[in-house]
Image (cartoon, rainbow, N blue to C red; front, side, top):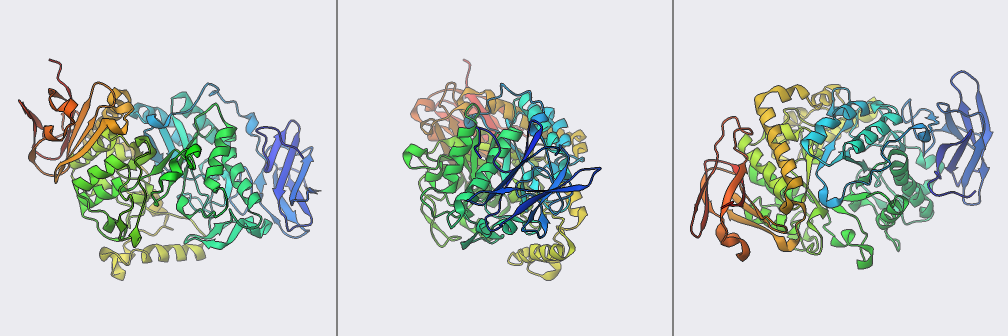
Length: 627
């Protein structure tokens, strides 16, 4: 069988009046597809076997909406590993879907450049009360008005149950049926593109979920005998049979790009994607995906704590050519500064303004120095990487949801400090990411939730509470029992955003600030493209950070006071070409539209000084004086 450019290689797909079926099952001698129509009897048809273990058939009189399973060697029948829809969940039959029936309107869409990213991370099930793709689509005008440029959807692969973060996915080609039909996801992406919003998808290529995973039925080569993870069996990207396993995952990424017009991926926990072969899976994945859609900007973003610069270097520089990395040091230093968190991985972060400024200058903090968490030198020098290659946040699904009770940063600090931190995030040269509801200071938590069968669910609940026993606040069993039960529907419901909060004055004022900051970042020339030679980040004292952006005229200064009142002089930390200039305040986070009780900083400018008096936490944005 030969494949034309863009044609699927796995699963079931329509070709005119025909339906193709193809599955890899190398240890089977015979594979039949058992097709069930809505109103008729089942039919069983044999697939032809190739020498490398692929089984293929082209059948007439199989229609969109028909359901099917594969029967191996006359035994039990199982869902398709590359099923495009599982209407009855991961244990049910697969359904024939025709992606070509959807009429796209985004033929002129080319994507969003890495330097223009303002990412908004959301969970489809809790972003709106509906918890569906259609619910997200209805809120797209709101997100476009907010000023973000890309949505990042938590994983959509089919999971067991009706509620899940998505990291227990087992049907990697099938969008979760709890959120709607696959065409509803296509409508969401198409509508986002019409509004100028890219759509990124979080995918999990390091393990599969514990319930409904049938890959091992088809081949034991899917899972590694040499590598292991804490979350489940490691996938086999470098052992016997790995070339076919790699193709399965390449095909999965291409499926999202071609059939759903996804603009790129956040690759979950790439540090546990094990591959000791001659070319790393991630490098080949990146090349294959980009080659498949050369007209669009496909973004590849890793979640990786190793701080290895070569992952993000181009191929000609011995790199893997990924676009960016989640760089958590920015968050960790801020969390330590504001709340004093020092347990677990926070022990590696001082939370000082000096180290926070260093992180902003470098992109990540650990560049080879000793790490207590890792017990030795950690990281490499990132100075050759561009600032947009570091994705930073004040909160994300991990840093909120992996707290015992899912509490947000705005639940722990005063509103003025939270506003100042927003300006630091959106004024830095690093790529900013917002987590859903952050822009109005949502009162709702985002807790960890699952919907597994009872036996597995009990283990998940016990494990969730047990993992916090090393934290002082949860050392006692009674305290652990206060941690929300991930299996309880109430935990999921409590994590759903309450959009009625936007009618409250404090939430509405904060939203105005975020809109102002996003628009400012997108339209201010000095913020749009900053080389390393055109940026200064410095600690003015133990509570204040200066960022100077002058890669393009006119220059911009951002002075952020994170705690308490005080007076600082920023001029001594400016480069020579900016030190002698006169400055004026453009806006502050304590201006009346953004704060119900404004404590606006004052610029006390004089010859040779650039002094700012802060009555409390605030950020001041300064531009060159007009006269």
